Image (cartoon, rainbow, N blue to C red; front, side):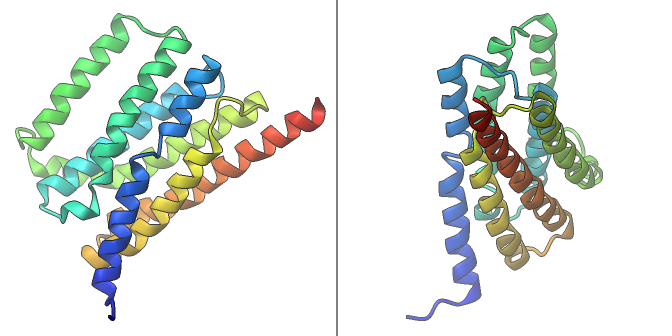
Length: 209
């Protein structure tokens, strides 16, 4: 039975969504095991969650195929757990973190219900690429500065690079939205850079020992 490009794109979307169910799981378990978040950039995580939220909301309000962005709600749930753990292990839970959480939840609901006009998301979406880039650069710098990647999971970043790669094709087939395509292409490169950096410093530290 022949599979055309659209069917192949749907299969890739299902594969991508399936992989995203475990995207942050290795990182979460790594933090729980070490009970340390020294090489994890909290600012990078906050930028990342901003990018994910805007992108998910943009896809939703524009009525794009659910298969083309279902991974975002899945990743966001894992991201909430990850940020909570990082705040706990870095002892940064305070009134400010609670206030930021409340503002985030209210803003997200307003986006989804279009209380905040859809045009705001259209203007915000191009910012997701620099925001996503910044979040990954912050994480990369945290690893390089510490010269250690014990708390960083290479597997999480491998899955990130892989799923971003498949999304380049599926977005092209579904909507060919250049804002989304640009975001995913850059993400492939930076996720790969973090993965290789974490592997390098793990090997480097083992060699030094």
